[in-house]
Image 1 (cartoon, helix red, strand yellow):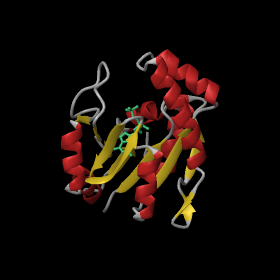
Image 2 (tube, rainbow, N blue to C red):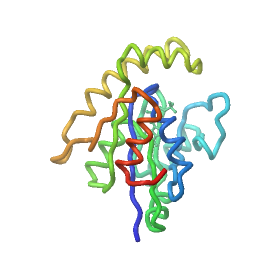
Image 3 (cartoon, rainbow, N blue to C red):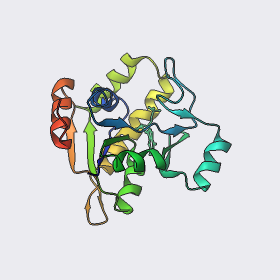
Image 4 (tube, rainbow, N blue to C red):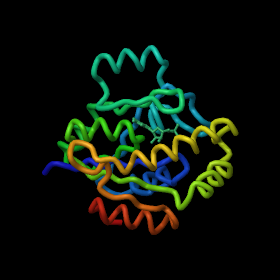
Length: 190
Ligand code: 5GP
């Protein structure tokens, strides 16, 4: 039996990382570890949260075709390594990608089969409060993440290759309810 790809996007601070953290505890679910050129945040582990690469190394791998998709976000590059996904799907697992909107568009353009979900914040004000409370971003970084969030919320409404970019948009008002809704949409048992 072949597995399933699940793409989860949403503005920084909308809660998608918390949703993914809960989902990856479930049996049969595997999480894609992306490559990035951004510096690790406090508490992040190499090979677990991200593969942290220099820009040269990232570009070399991108040119080599190692990434299923990649995009620039807030001055850094982020990409999905191709091979872990192929293996997980072949093995019948649910494979979760937490990626931004431009990367999702590349997957839709290539008609990559999967369930595409967008987690939205209850409001822009609440998003800003969450980023401030998180305390891991500078003021300038927060400003630019809020600006990108507005653009992403708009871009998420696009139609790509004849279908909506996302199959479902889930406003994250209550984290537990959001996790339950996502688990139901992707057909995994909690
Ligand atoms: P952060 O710096 O907050 O960890 O991530 C910034 C943004 O990059 C988030 O929207 C996250 O979902 C996205 N992202 C993380 N990994 C990838 C990836 O492999 N590809 C793409 N396109 N976006 C990614």
